[in-house]
Each structure stands twice: as structure tokens, then as C-alpha cells.
Image (cartoon, rainbow, N blue to C red):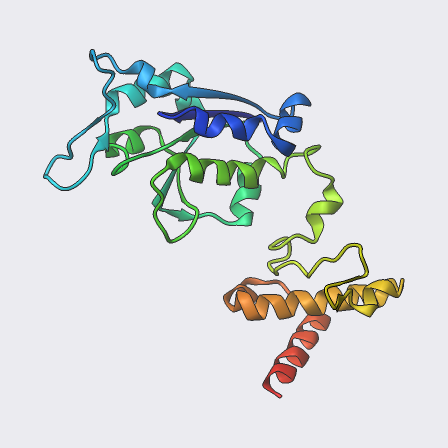
Length: 242
């Protein structure tokens, strides 16, 4: 996958591609990227990329010309262009899965009051919100989306590591434990030490349901649960009521 990022602040995203799992994905050739400072495409003496909004109001708006020239320089009309914005469609795991199938993605990092709408109308395919809150930096939202997407590419992370993650089956992930067996008066649940794979699997399903019900109950309505899991959910609801 090739990723282009248009930003006024390249150092904010550069470290993301040179650290941890992403750096290994780049080294393996699974991901390659370009970071474009669209200030370089501003033609006025001060390389100005923002201006006051028409109609008045607070803040500044990113101008069309530098952004459009930067987008044209990378052939953005033939690529999937993403603009992270609180006004966009909510980002989900299934959305990340969809984007992971693309050969190329372009991200526009907004600032201030956002982009001139004409840039969005002409180039943007996906306006994406990572949550119901506002950030001062489009770079932060961009790296969140990229992080969720690139790890789904074949060869980045072992497939078995992805199977039981939160939202892989629309439920939150079960609790995890590692050595030591006892720490600060708290012990690893006995079932995980039993070596009984069926009991461990049952425990994990139950804990996934419990965690989802307590933290994100609205997710349960979207989950595809088989008959046995639904029975366990009913048992859990009755147990919590009791």
C-alpha cells in the first residue's frame, strides 16, 4: 500500500512511519509513503496557506490553491482521498477493513477551521470522523486511521493475532494475563492455568460478553451472535440482575 500525506507539519507524522511495527512494514515493502508539505505549493512571498472565512466568523480556513496543486502533483484524482474531520462518517473496524483493500490512500491533514469546501468537493472521497470530539491537529486523526488500516495488510501482523481482537466479531476483547501468576495480591484466573482449551474458550466468550455489556452495550445490537453465545448472554444478563 502506498500512502500520501498532505500536511503543514511533516515532523508530526514522520516519526509514525519510522517507529515500531510500521517501520518494519516499511522495511518489508508492505507500506511505502510520501509526506508532502503543501506549503511548498503556495506561490505568494510568505507561502500563506490559510485565509479568513467568507461570511465572517472565527479562525482561518485552508486555501484551495496550495492544496489543489499538491493533490494534482501526486495524481490524487486517481486515488482514494481521505479527509479526517469531525463532520465525517464515523470510523469503525469494518471501515478500516474496507480501506485496507486499497492500493493507495491519500490523507489531507486539516487545521484551523478546516478546508475550503471546494477542495473537499473536487478531491475528497471519504470524510472520516474518528469520534465525536474535535482535535486541533489533522495529523493526529490521520495517524489513527492509518494505524487501524495498515495493520490489517497481509504480512504486517500474524493473522491469528487479529482474530480475537476487539470488534473482530463486534465484541470487545477478553482480558489478557501474563507472568507472574500472582502479583500484588491478584492472581491469574484458575481457568487460564488449567490447560483445558474448551473451558478457556468458554471463559473468554463469557468475558467478552461481560466486557461489551458493561463498556459498550450498544455494540451488542450489531453483533452476529450464534445461539450458544446468545444463551450465554442471557445467562450473563440474569446473573447481573441477580
